[in-house]
Structures are given as structure tokens and as C-alpha cells.
Image 1 (cartoon, rainbow, N blue to C red):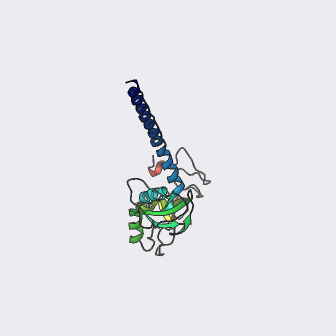
Image 2 (tube, rainbow, N blue to C red):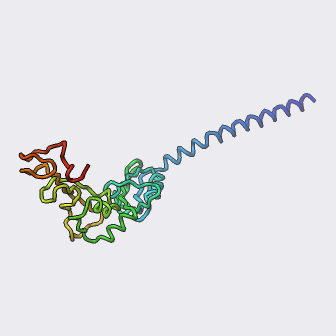
Image 3 (tube, rainbow, N blue to C red):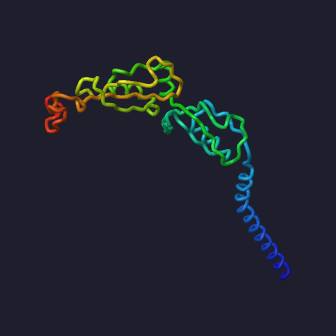
Length: 217
């Protein structure tokens, strides 16, 4: 009887040891799989991304161990609730790159594409109010720049008229091209003589009364 108990105890110990070893192997197997997966990411070809959404391209490139730099028209950003379609990439499709390299992708939004398709040539902004010009260019506001300039050719008191633009009206616009315009103003500050608006006889501005006769305040 004692011999049978010894055999039973030996079998029990064997199974316990086997379970422990098996558990350890399973425990470290996950780490081994991750190490193998990391080693499997090597030089790869840049995939075809033109026409895809930025979010899709980011997931695809990151799975290849690559970084992404998304560049919008006028350095606009791609927000999660906006369609951002890729139209250019660098390096080119098929180029072999190493893990960790950055792929640059240029994108446009649906509103931007619609604006450039509608305006094949540059609209005439000169004479518009600043508010109206900005409203017209709103879909591509990130690619728009404006400046202001004092001019005596405008009536005194006018401060929101577009006086110049680039490109010129009627010029064919390339997709993604930036636009700049200058808004003129004339407060009568640079005039000489006894002009209205509280100006002194020597052309200087009488600040306490400036603008009162024009109903500005």
C-alpha cells in the first residue's frame, strides 16, 4: 500500500510541474509574439494613398511603422468631422522607406475643392467691402491673406474697401493657390488744410472731436 501512495504522489507532482512550465511558456509567448512582430517591420514600399481620406492613410502608414505629416491648403488642419482627401504624397508611391520615416501627404477638404472648381479664374474683389470679400473666400480662408493701407483716394470715413488683390481679376487660378488682398481706409489723418472731422487748420487731428461730425460716436 505504501508503494502505491508513493506512485500516486509522484504522478501528482509531475502534473503540477507540467502545469507550471506550460503556464510560464504561455506567459512569455505574448512577449515573444510582439518581438517577432516588431522584427518583421522592415523597409517597405509607400502604398497608394491618393484619393484616400487622411484618417485611413494614417492608420495604414502607422501599421507599417511609418509617421505621417498631413499638410492642408494654406496649412489648414484636418478635423475629425471633415472629409480630407489626399491629392499628393512624398515620397512617391512605390518608394522604399525604412520604419520611422515620415510620409508627407497633402489634402484638400470638400469645401476647398468645390471653391476652386467653381472659380476657374480669380474673382474681382476690388471695390468690395472687407466683409463681403472674406465671405466669398471663406471656403479657402486658410489660403487667404489680407492687409490694410491708408489711402486718400477713398472718401474720408471709409475703412473697409478692397483696393488691390493678387492674383489679378480674371487670372486663371491653380488649385491650392493662395490669395491676398489689401483693404484701404481713409480716416482723414493724413490730409492737410481744415478738413472735417475735427481736423485743425494745420491738418492735425483734434482728437476730442475727431469723428463726431461724421456720427461715428
